[in-house]
Amino acid sequence: MSRAKALQFYVITRLLLAPLMLWTITSVVFLLLRATPGDPVDAILGPRAPSAAKEALRSQLGLGGSLLEQYISYMGALLRFDLGISITTQGQSVWQIIGDHFPATVELAVFSMLVALVVGITVGAVAAFKPNTIWDTGGRLFGIITYSVPAFWAGMLLQLIFAVWLGWFPLGTRFPVTVTPPPSYTGLYTVDSLLSGNLGAFWTTIYYLCLPCVTLGILLSGIFERIVRVNLRQTLQADYVEAARARGVSELRILLAHALKNAMIPVITVLGLTFAALLGGAILTEVTFSWPGLANRLYEAIRLRDYPTVQGVVVFLAVIVVIASLAIDILNACIDPRIRY
Image (cartoon, rainbow, N blue to C red; front, side, top):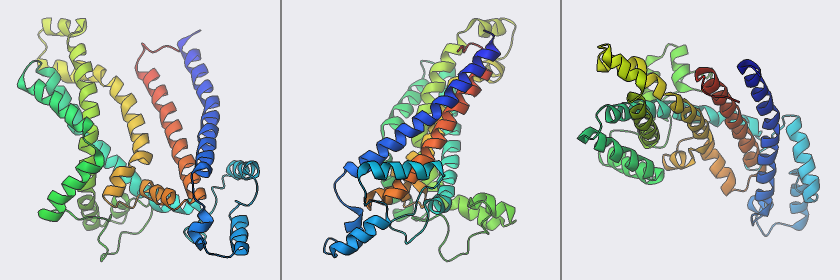
């Protein structure tokens, strides 16, 4: 089988497996929510509400039938792309909640990833290029510390230092509450401010992004530092690198034009999956910084036992992770001829 046909077969297989993965995730979330103690009806009406009112609300929310009936109704709604209505936001659809909060998560993820890539690749490349030196030791320590420090602890510490004590950065919002945000074209304040030609709003948005993005980015940079350092060191010992040195090619050119490019292949895989996980997994960072993103909203929905919101947001994020995983696998197969399927 040729490489093109093998890759085509792999892509088709992954596409066929994607619905099975999504069905498994949604089913597990559905069952876990209903297995946890507590009743969302009691959370809304209170435990002393009349039984008739509770039953009426339970029927309205789709919680009145048996577990199997609820599951069939829920899966049928998913097939119609209906994520349901939030229990706790007075009739707001889950799609509206996603539209309101997801742009904030995207901005946080994008700028955090930029910080992580710049810092991680730089530190990893320097450590690999200068083995067995203080730079190498420092790179190792940097990777270990940033990888092991809890996000919530680092977030609270940096907020205490830079926001409370020094007063350099704001807390708890994406934009000043006393200033009108830019017109909403995409929901991304950085993009919307540029589209509207408001550079002041753009730099204000960047200013409010600085502390949470730098915190999350530095913590993530340890992952990329370790990958770049290990792979780049192996690449610098390869035969073609030695041949380039024998031809008199400068070390800087070898690093930038030959070694670093090949060492970046594993980084692409981690980059895609980390970014996808960031879109739904930055709960600790968003909660710590009171960032109004989708992960923070998911945390609130879990706390309030808002079944439709939790299920809908998880399905939405699961789709993103599945698509990102598939895209990264295909990209790796295209840029790395050593990969076979």
